[in-house]
Image 1: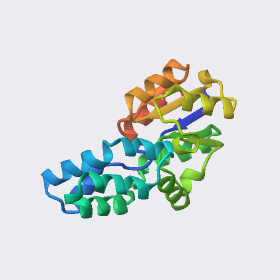
Image 2: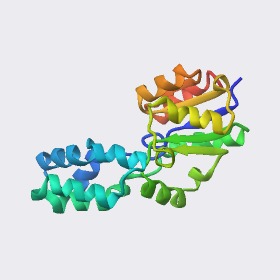
Image 3: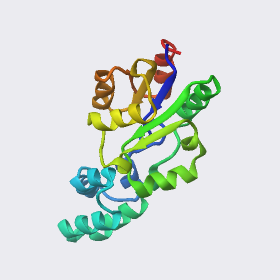
Image 4: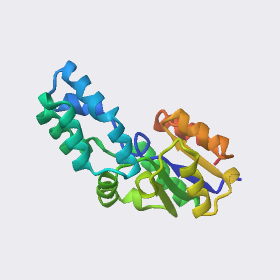
Amino acid sequence: MIKNVVFDIGNVLLTFNPRKHLENLGFPEELRERIYAEIFESDEWIQLDKGVITEKKATENFCKRAEDISKELKLTMKTWKDMLKPIEGTVSILRDLENKGYKIFFLSNFHRDAYEKMYLKYDFLRIGQGKVISYEINEVKPDEKIYKKLLKTYRLNPEETIFIDDSLANVETAEKLGMVGIWFLDSDGLEMSLEEYI
């Protein structure tokens, strides 16, 4: 019997589309792809998720590596949180599950500064019984350690727990640890998947 539902945040509850954001900033395609690689595919991006580097230091590193586009890199780092908007369909599902008495948790890879801003901005991130965010424990999904931290901290029985994530690799780790995994593609699909368990 399912008692707990664990939500990822990025691209499940909040939109995260860097390429679209770079397009909105007006950068031409070739530059967009370069910025995307320099920032969003960098080691520093993972280090920010792990909470082991500051945004200031990460930005300095980006600009040092690609001095010719430092202005564009700084603008991207200054504005990227603007792309984090609620995915209303999923937010509605989360609120409905809470109203039905399910225990809600969050397990997400997220930068400290970005998470703290979103936590204050959106009340649905304050719903529920608990959370483990990557920067807090210096671990990221799909490493098993971050999942085990959630299960142990809140004494969750994996077999009573659904885990929802937009990354298949992250879902597979949850399933390996005994949770019910749902690979998130869109809110309608999530609603249909949950009907099997809820």
